[in-house]
Length: 418
Image 1 (tube, rainbow, N blue to C red):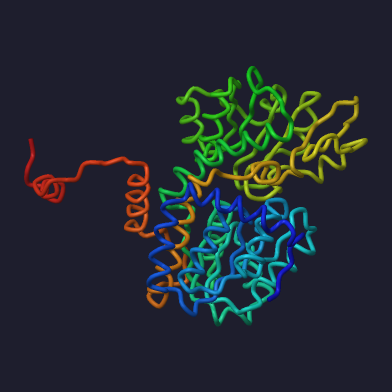
Image 2 (cartoon, rainbow, N blue to C red; image 1 turned 90 degrees about the vertical axis):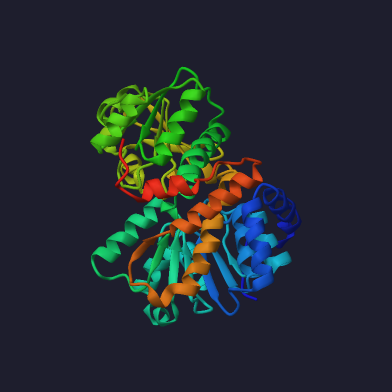
């Protein structure tokens, strides 16, 4: 079996951590039980480019239980949990290609290795697998029946491909499921981003000006958590509707040029590039902390900061100090990569339970329906979204009302008025 991980001796530690996260993923566990019984993915080859975490390990085991042949590679060089990668190889016989801190060349070598079994389905978190297939491994496209995409950044890339007519197979945007972005992006990113910042720096957030670039679901969640920690939250936005929503939610809203002058901690969550750039670094306070929780590190213009800096050194794990003219210092966390995974453990398992339940059921939907789908980006079917929400409520001991026949009739007709 091919694999490339840091150290198989870490496998036993990874197994215990994977078992722990499984305790908090009851929805995925119920899907795994059904998959093991029915084997609906028998003969299906899957290449997964995801964050290699304990929660992902439980998703891979669910797909395997359904009969799939799965290969896993990292979707970010700093997000791999090496003990989890080792346990998947040693105890679960999954070909894994991921090492935390791997360089650019190794990252892409691993992506190519994950495609070594000519997959039928791709599972992406950032669309790197899809991009490689469409640019460098086009000979494998004939095998592909469909794919899934986990995150906002990837969905943006894929919709652009579809718009320009270059997307060669259907993709389900798992990120757009209500049971994904309402919970994963808002509650998962909100909590885990603060967790990563605090683990990396141990700074006190209370009383600090906490600048968040972007007020999508990730920005909303992060703003809630930062405000709860006592920070003064400032939002920067380009979308006027989101900006007014942030204002009405009680936050200060201003351009980044203004926020850069007053911010103590900065976090980008936009999915775009150069959101914090040279003109912002020039006016930041001495001691400003800069982090990213969007998918790629391009949100912070690190090359510009490197060019401006007179000196650079690592002062803590995941904290790089840049000394600028005038001896001002700016601290960048986790190389500008996802701080919640670089310095912490990513989203809580209770959140990823729903995200990965969407992944598993979307793969099943592709296997059953790919022949009917165009080469486009699709939302997760509403029935899947609703079923996952129903299952999650059940695991939480929550019951809800049902519409009566009279109510269903009333909602479906127009004749009855006041």
